[in-house]
Amino acid sequence: MWIRKRRGWEIDERAATPESVYLSRRALLGAAGIGAAAVAMPRPAHALFGSLFGSSEDLGKTLDTSSDPTADLYPFPRNDAFTLERPLTEETVSGSYNNFYEFGSHKQIWQAAQALPTRPWTVTIDGLVEEEKTVGIDELIRAMPLEERLYRHRCVEAWSMTVPWSGFPMKALVDYARPLGSAKYVRMETFENPEVASGQNQSWYPWPYIEGVTMAEATNELAFLVTGIYGKPAPKQFGAPLRLALPWKYGFKSAKSLVRFTFTEERPVSFWEEIAPNEYGFWANVNPEVPHRRWSQAEERVLGTDETIPTQLYNGYGEYVAGLYADKEGEKLYM
Image: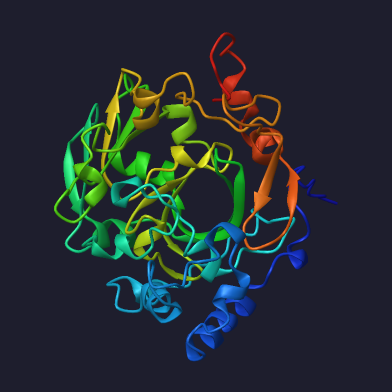
């Protein structure tokens, strides 16, 4: 008899919040105008619904993506290989506590991010590929194998959340791109539009936002390209219409609102690596025993709760990814 051995970070699917529960709750909150949202907010965002950052009604409007051209595809089938050991973060919490430096450096960036036009939107694939191409985002999404995954997300700032990402494996994009054998890295570039993204008028930042991964990382089964969340297209503050999710790395590696994938032999210099190479490296793998230069990484604050919990090596996904770094002695893998 075949017996499936669970990964160290997996639990029984029955312990995860069922899709029907969070979708039904989303509908209920929408009907109620999300009046109780402030109660569930993490403490750093306690003033979220004041006059400075907008109302709960405003937030509710940003979470409604029913007009998205791909809305008919959602919800995607859940991939049961990816489960969680703690409840999902409430949508009103994760949707109102975001990093998106293109629009500013404060966490309540959700309102400013609504200025980003996400249609028309094209994605360019170039560099060491059989044929360079530019494709519309809706065409790309409809060409991919779509699924939902429950992932943990760990920010380098020592907070975390657990969310149901919708999208497709990054490996599917690599296959679609048909890279040459000489390609060693995937360099990713986000949008650049300072007319709507005020943060991009700050000249001390090296815009556009650049990130990169090795080909081995890009084709690892955990690497995921996100188009949606909570069973619907992603609101803009989450990095619509296309972002990266690398759950074993700190969140700054998961670049938002991507427009270009370049296959190259040269290792890219990422956005934060260029700004502060002594604090933010290329690899950015989660490790509780390697502190940031300004704070410990041993624990993390769970958004929407009063919990502080121990951080896990590779964010608990080591069984999937530790082998990627077996030959990287001397590299700064955990910053």
